[in-house]
Length: 277
Image (cartoon, rainbow, N blue to C red; front, side, top):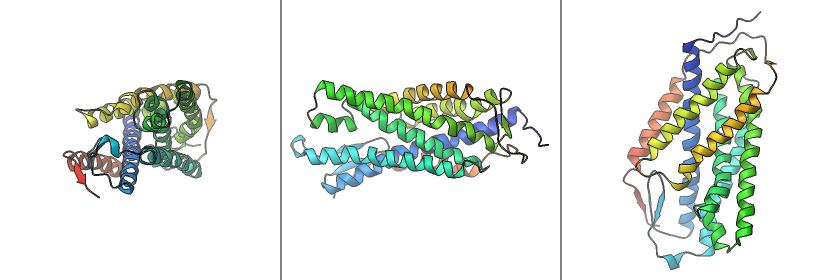
């Protein structure tokens, strides 16, 4: 009979740190995937720009904008991010029965990607930011914009339902069984603590100026995770396999890589990089 994983303070923080490092890394990857695609699309129109750690500054006059440039520059990133989110969820399903602890990064990839895209449909649309510029240039009526915002809202709710079971099953990396005894321990370490610490890191990363969408995305992510936690608590106990599980040690390679990535971006792009195609 397998030995039960101890619900100790050490094991709690090993799970929490591993999940937090992947949570932050996934968030930054999604953010810069969109930024990178935006820069590539800007190059199609030869617009001179300055790229910083938090945004892109356009060195052009207002009349140089066209319908095609706005549509391509501001929509290509969210489309690719959405595809990436779906692929990440598919990748996780391929590893769902494996004991690897880092497979949680695929769930965070998906949740951050869906949060980014559907928040753009709602928040970006309301505040005419990022993807909202596309709808503004389409001269949509208020009713159409409201319908798009509703699509974003329900897309966010659906995302929470989609990732609930994958998050629940990710417990098989540490436990042989997830039940009423260890569920609060696992949820707090794997989900709640990473969200709290990750949100603080995200805000500090962008200081002193936080991009418009990022000011709201952390709140939206919190709402999504509340839905996830409510659904997880309502799920029945689940046995994974009989192979003895153990929490192990902190994944230092992922943690160090995440820290170095943060420092490299902030230092490398702090003053901005000018690009004149």
